[in-house]
Image 1: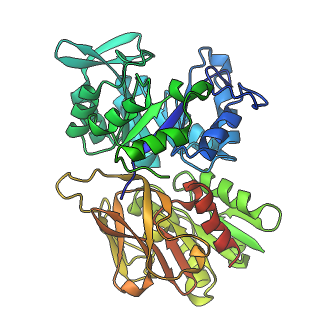
Image 2 (image 1 turned 90 degrees about the horizontal axis):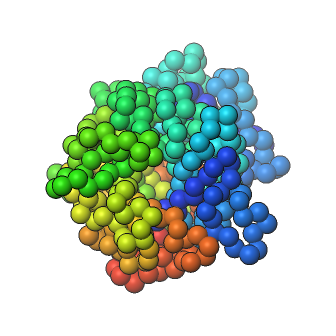
Length: 251
Length: 208
């Protein structure tokens, strides 16, 4: 039976982890490679890096991080943030990323998803959807949540599946950073609309939220950042908890 | 000893390279090449594959003499070869992704789309699933039955002779996820992305 996945996400800026696990025995708390290794040794089903480097001159730092991590972590590695073109995707894959997540570029230029999924295969193309509730629907935002595209998130999700996305990483902007739980309504509607896996993101504050994301949100995988930081919960605790709630996980 | 990973410009093989180098350490030389002379002289060959069946077969054919060299290596000389994902699928006679495409024909059978039972099962089949070992395979030495492996695919290999099947996985039906026929090995899952247990499979192949 296919297991639901738990994916810890690390924000990386200028090649350094911004918020992190911060274990006392860490030699270097800001080192993304070391933190990714802790997650993968702890049973993470995948690792996600979100590059939030703002300045262009430091953009290349992520390639070095991906290259070093992929030599130490033998679980899938997804990298997103600032991916603009097929060439960016190619570079990340060559450095050892297994999947690349595309956000703004997928909205602005549909060819990026169409061309990259043809060139590299759908299995490595994740479309990240930042959605915010507006009345009785959700709208897609770009540029790290700054710009409203006005596009309906459900229709967009369907279109991205057609364009060749292998997975959708859906973040509720209303919930992101609130620790109030996933927007399970949004997740389940998108998941029912498409036939590709949905990764739920945004809003996890406790282990029950992970359960909700899978049971009510119908997500195939749950992504979380802060609950794994500073040792609040380990991956193993999260998996044991999901297992106790009858959710199939890899233990 | 040297192991050659065939680089035929189809998809991303950096994870495969990393995992073999991790296992090989300094004991075994890992070559990454499409040079047919190097492939001929290697002890073992790894045939990865990403993207569609058709794109992989096309990419193999584009390199002059490569398909013949692989045939000679695996069929005539019976040297150990491991196919991963579409690398395994290409063992078949024929594949139906995009359009009907002839495979290498090493293990009789076809590659067709997984039956998603009218949308009940999402495709691609992405994530960790358990393998049911149905036959002793040399690459499963010290690998427990029901171990988790990482999968990502929408098509499955259906071999004609069921005796070649060494493991299956349950996703809408029993999908063939590992085969062994004499010197030819294949996994539908990605051992290179399947954590320590995946590395064990790679180690078993390297140490055959």
